[in-house]
Length: 159
Image (cartoon, rainbow, N blue to C red; front, side):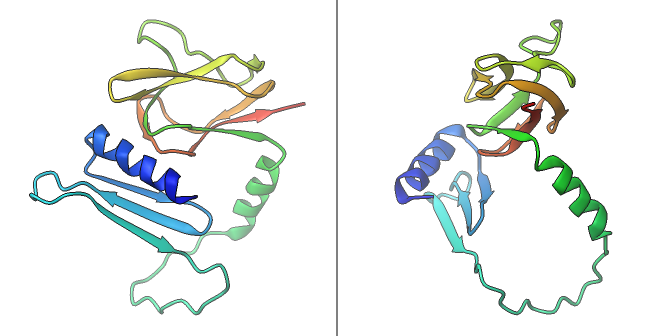
């Protein structure tokens, strides 16, 4: 992520009225806090995540362990699919109105340019169109849920 993208993100968050946004990507963590209610301006924290294995601090709290093998198998299975990600921050909706059917359902065949969902950002409803053709395998976000920039929304089987 370059400095121009970070500046645009800060401006977008400031205009959106959100008080805090956290964004984690491969090697960068960004936290943007607006000063609403505290009498301050914006605060932006950018943290570079080490890419090489550095020793992690030992935690005093108990950590629940989960079976890694099932997560790895699921990740391998999902790797053959194309992930459709959110281009903006906002609220995800599967249909344009409560009384209308969803734009797409699991098993539907889509083509380039088909509307998959809408994302509401700053009282504007933005139609999210498919950039790939294929079949919807999984919907990864619940209806009327907040989504972040680059958050996975759908898995599409391109075959």
